[in-house]
Structures are given as structure tokens and as C-alpha cells.
Image 1 (tube, helix red, strand yellow):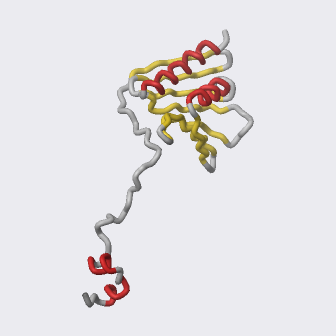
Image 2 (cartoon, helix red, strand yellow; image 1 turned 180 degrees about the vertical axis):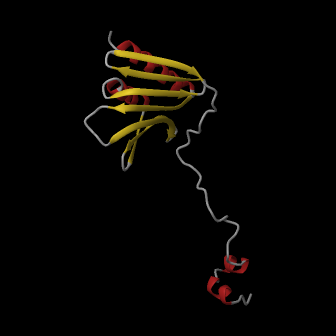
Image 3 (spheres, helix red, strand yellow; image 1 turned 180 degrees about the horizontal axis):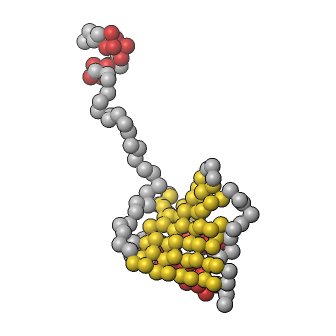
Length: 157
């Protein structure tokens, strides 16, 4: 029995989760390809330039490489790699988890219910600053007049 029908079923679930906004992440594991340093690929939905995309994070031993793809390109990559070079995939959505495993000719898809919140798809993240911006060391005089050097020695007004 070929794995093609199960792969198409899995990919249809990925596409549906992406389109419905329920995709949390997709992990590809069990890499059996020519690049020995590649460990896994983590895929999540992001918005770049007001367009929904899939962000592929290729996890190597010493670095991560991120590539963003629109849905048709991403589905073509997944169709080519799933079952051929990646033996395991885990689809995490807000409603369920779907686990794809291939061992030789045997393919197993397990579905498990889950209850998660939808993650943020924003590409830009706010920085976590250790020093609060309101805690500046310059006086109001230095900020208004631009006399930081004088105020550091003692403000003369």
C-alpha cells in the first residue's frame, strides 16, 4: 500500500488549518536526506506584508535558517518531502493534533483532541527591554534644551 493517500489526507488537514486560522505549528522530524546536519523543520503561520505565509525554520546542529513561503509553494515542498525525507510530522492546531508516521511501507496517522489558543501571526515582535524608557537618567532640562553635558555637571537652568 502506498503512502500517497495518507500524505494527501495529512496535507489537506494542514491546508484547512492554515486557511481557517487554526494552525499552531507543524513539525517535520525523522530526517533521512542528504544533509546530515539538518535535525528538523518547524513550520508556523505568519503575516508578512499583509499576506499569510508559512515560515519554515530549518533547525541544524549549529544554526537555524528561516524561509517564508506562500501556501502553494509550501504545499509543494511538503508533498515532495513528507514520506520521502521526513518520516514523522506533527500538525498542531487549536482543536486537534495529527501525528503522521512512516516506517517502511507502513503509514500511521493518529488524531488526538487538543484545546489551544490561536498564536499570534505577527512577524514583528515588541522588544522586551530591561530598562524602562521612563527611567531615563537625563533631567527634563537636558531633554528639552539638549544640554546633557551641562546638566550632568549641574544644571544652571
